[in-house]
Image (cartoon, rainbow, N blue to C red; front, side):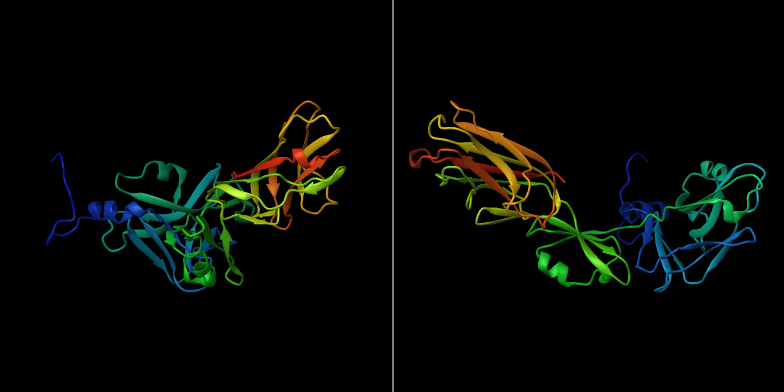
Length: 327
């Protein structure tokens, strides 16, 4: 048959069809914050895989579920040549009573899996010839299914305990266009804010600058705001969420400057802090732009600073600010 579709009304769903429809969401551990499928290396050439500390360890492989509510011991014999043991969950369509089984496969066995079988690796042990199990290399993968959800309210998400969700669940908050991930530990769960890209641009016209004084440009009027929930402008100082930004500021005079040294700079709002970047305005020029690229901490508000050695009320500068978040 060249083309099929399923499920069909009133008809049973085959294992293959079930795996395609339900398994399309992926295979992985369902992390309930209780360290499911944790492994212990024993001294008698065996390993013990544990359930979750909060109940049975649970996983999905190719659309089929697996649970482990007691510890299970698996054998990993000593070897005469370097061997990799793969501990994981094997889906076998021919196993009618246990379609997903916790087992151990060597690298050659894994490479020769029969068609239709699917293996979800949890741990790997690399054991050298004559090496004790305690000295072998343990690599823990434990791939977890991490749902991605939507919410219209960041405040509602942050008010909910992350423990209500699978560990790693990400909720995209559409009101601030930012993802939050259920992270931390069982005893100290937290919502981890994800990076957001976006742009904020604004202008400040006819900024007063006293002669010989370094002053911060006052509040900017936004002209472009796109996914910029990370920007908080207050009286010229702008506070940004932790992240990596490209910040650009332009000072433009109404006429070419010919009255001594002038510059525009990006620096912390604290006037005594060191400048991040500065661009001079040479005599005979009327515009200068400074750009800075780097990591910004939310605890360190920034500002655009201006200086004119001989300011003129007839030639007050206009200022443009552009902030783009890149990570």
